[in-house]
Amino acid sequence: MPIIMLAKAAKGLAAGTEITVLATDLAARYDVPAWARMTGNDFVGESETDGGALALTVRLRS
Amino acid sequence: MHTIARYRYDMQRSRVYLDSGGSAPLSGRVADALRAGFAEGWADPARLSAESRRARALVDGSREAIADVLGARPELLHFTTSPHDAFARCIAGIHAARRGRHRIVVSAIERDALANAAAFTAPHSVDTVAVDTAGHVSIEGLAAALQSDEVALAAVQHANQELGTVQRLEDVARATQAADVPLLVDATSSIGHIDPPAYWDALVAHPADWGGPAGIGVLALEPHTRWLQAWPDGDDWAPGGISVPLALASAVALQEREEARREQNDRLAALVYRIRATAAQVPGVDVLGDPHERLPHVVTFSCLYVDGEVLLGELDRRGFAVGSGSACVSGTLEPSRVLAAVGALTHGNVRVALHPGVSEDDIERFLTELPDALDVVRKRIGAPHIAS
Image (cartoon, rainbow over all chains, first blue to last red; front, side, top):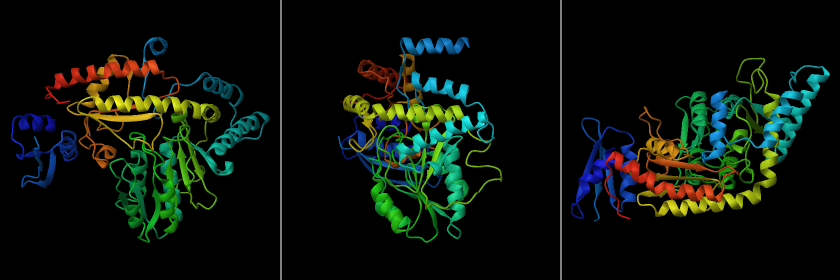
């Protein structure tokens, strides 16, 4: 599950750090912004990689 | 037979059924009506004998009783073989009568059955109107979609089967009337639970959702709603005719619900309020839908770091049947349109839909088990700790 990997990656990182999730799972497009909202972080935006994967970026608040 | 008998035993002994969306346990009165329908209404209502006239009278009486609740004309209320078929025929029929106009406008959270019927009737010509995070259709978005003079019809649901959110149909209808576009209202989750919608040109309802039997749907049309037959000759709205017992039991179920509705609703709404408040306190749980403009008996919440199917299985093991709503079906990659449209997590969803037999004690037990069940499935998946 992409957001579990995201949550583990975010652990211990400083506020203001940006993390980009690369995903081929279509649900990640909705789940990453929902994760940011539910965990008090900020969703920055999405783009597409050259390989066609989704790139979803969040900024940590705490 | 053995399996059925054992299942009923389980249901009575310890099971708590909290998945009554589109299906609910039949009450004694409804089961009696089914039996009476088979005993008295076995003849083909389309024939001329006294037996057939008796069967037809049962259907006509059922139609009148349901039309009376819906505020519909009995002669324009049709039984169908399912709500799915009602959507398909209604959309195809109205679309066919709107020559030169081919587009269909739907909200982003319509049922799959309706959205699929629209896409089938108007391939690549369905316009989707966004909803806000509570699930209310954007009236500006709807008005913009209706600006085109190619729109055959619009479809907006009365209430959402997962979010529980009730649409502001007066505003919706003002937009469709201004554009002179017929409005199909999917009331398959609301009839028998809240007051019927006051604004529609065509309406679909689902008897099994109000405690009636499965296997029948209801379609109501307003006198001004034009349609053309878009299916083979010899078919009416229900190909091959409808089941008299199912029609009769549907009418009896609706009357029973309506008689007890106000008093039941206060009780169920209090239970839903309690679930919403308690679930919101659990770390990593998001309670969905409008907190006030909502169905009294439905509540959905989504849980971080949880596979919804695994959580359903864990709750089932503990004696509670809940739903996953339309959450992503295992094996498909397409996430739920409803959950995506309101910005909710597309996994880890639990839908609770109460029937009148659910007690306060059932809900207290459910709420006691829920955090522990969540803990178990989160640990199993290796979820990170969530700060409360």
